[in-house]
Length: 326
Image 1 (spheres, helix red, strand yellow):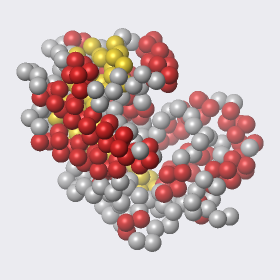
Image 2: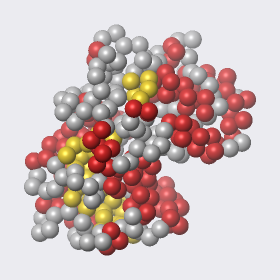
Image 3: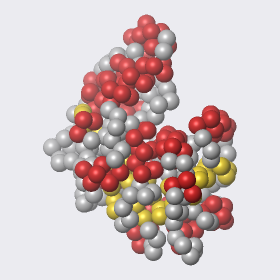
């Protein structure tokens, strides 16, 4: 079957990873159906992406089983990204479970009921491996899971549902994937990451390529780790410092960040072994430097205004930290 005739369902199409995946799918000239919630933000995002190439959209929730069943019909592959992530998953656990777990179960059931079953490509997370101190080795696909919050418990349960089904599946576990959309409202969760924490960056556009390439790659039955590779492995101090400097804000005070006193207090990010995923999916193209240059271009003249206000902005952001006592 030629690429242009392959029919793909993309859930969560207008989020961060969804947008990047949609762009990669358009480039491959697939027949694409997007499924996402009908919100003003998603409507605006869909409208802005129309000029990139053809795709169709159905509005609704993956918690609607009948809607999911109708969307899956005739598809060659389903890329399932729709989910509620932290911090909302921790603030609204019942809603998060309904979307994350039941929504995934709906997708699996819809595929199971088809005579010719499409390949399911599911987005999971490196966070399922639990807290990782700096002395621990990089994670790989065989690393035991250790869920610690609603979100990670949901992802682990989804993986179990998928693996126990009779459908063709691929699970991609993602590292930190910052959005290209500017947001000066710093999420307080960033301060839960100790400065010595290992973190692996991945460019959102590269992650989109990984999902798109997984459609035809020989990945059925595989769990693959998606990170930027050795050139994108760094520590939180450098990661947050470089991002803050790129935005013109400057380095945040060290005492705004968590200082772990026991192994369970480290954050759930780590460096990753991505040799197999890169060999199969050929997605690692961009570095943190590329991302920073893009951020500077997006900010434009605003970056100079931010620099002028940087002392005030640093204090305002630091005060959001529960660890900052200056």
